[in-house]
Length: 258
Image 1 (cartoon, one colour):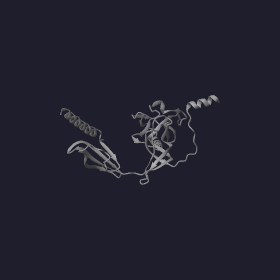
Image 2 (cartoon, helix red, strand yellow):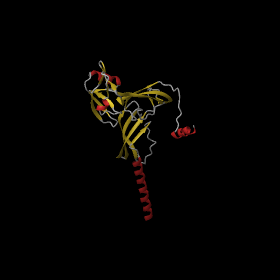
Image 3 (cartoon, one colour):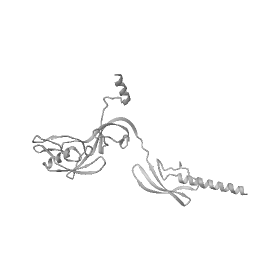
Image 4 (tube, one colour):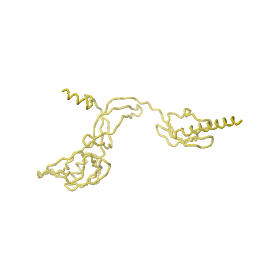
């Protein structure tokens, strides 16, 4: 009799353990392409119920569910039901134009002023390569043309330049534009407002005409820092030549045998 009770006790403990594992391993959120949840196996008396629509969009529906043992609520489960999409693989190249948030400083140069003297604002400012000019006299700057206009508008008076450095810190610098001609002033900065390159379109959605491509951070060729991209666009492109990549070791061997 004692042996039978021991077997019953062990059996009950195994059942409780199975329930515990089933409950603890059941996901807190579910994403599926249909509302049929039969693929999720539950122990007897466990059920998902209490569907409450939280929100919906053109492509998905979100529900609040509860995992319950009878009428006892055990945990909350969020359910997202997605509509199936059919995508077309592409694999073709495309030109990419990327526009920086502001105007990036990539270098400095000396300038001959209207009197024939050589000047450089780099001698009297803390501006550095990689800084992004985002404001001139508190006016936002988004491209080189706007920068040029603001420099000439002040008619030689001091400029307050707001920049963001490569660490994301804002700083302000007061500089004096250099007069190079009648109604013409310059700062002696080499700047850029964007970058171009070639990418590969991965796929597109024939219903919405949306497309996607694998992306990664882009390092500026002049400063060696990651670009802070504000926006971009895709253009047609054509590959006209290829250069096979080689390792540094193989290049050294070739030079040796030459």
